[in-house]
Length: 237
Image (cartoon, rainbow, N blue to C red):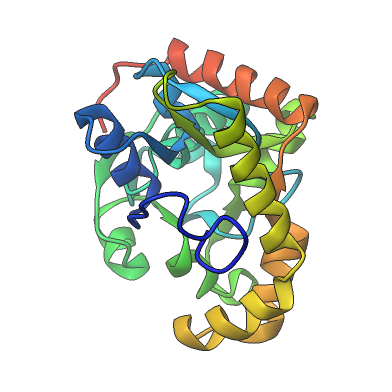
């Protein structure tokens, strides 16, 4: 939408998904990429076929713990992704029988582990971690979900108010996604150096870990996650 045929169609603003959700809730935005968990909180129309998902290890959402998952009693979380926080809760409860007390914390691994048994690190801070080099238990929550359910995990979707998500708008988003997927090497070259990542890491992440075109299995996984999230809704973070 910055460089392709869709350039100029929409007025763009850039925020993390939780910020996009707030913009939608306030009416400041018509469409945004929002945490899938937000679908339990707002009445939004999904733009079908595009989003952010994984079919295995996601690499950018890590639970790092000083003890085995079933023994975690306190968890410090980077709350910039509401879906990731709920996913951690669901996996710890349903897979490991743990119900830790969660507290929000800036994404600083060592500082988080000084105040809690485990830390939820997401996004760029997670990508800067070399999991195999840490002296801790490391759980990739994408892999954990897929192993637990046999279904993909959808972290975020493009969604908006029903009047805004028209067929031409939806097709523009799908076309923009295809435009970007056909230019991965250009994205790697631009974003790797800007963010301080190697080309190898960015390429691996964008081609092997993250899925942007969503199909029926992805939405099946999303609906299961939303059901689990609703069942645990209302617990404080």
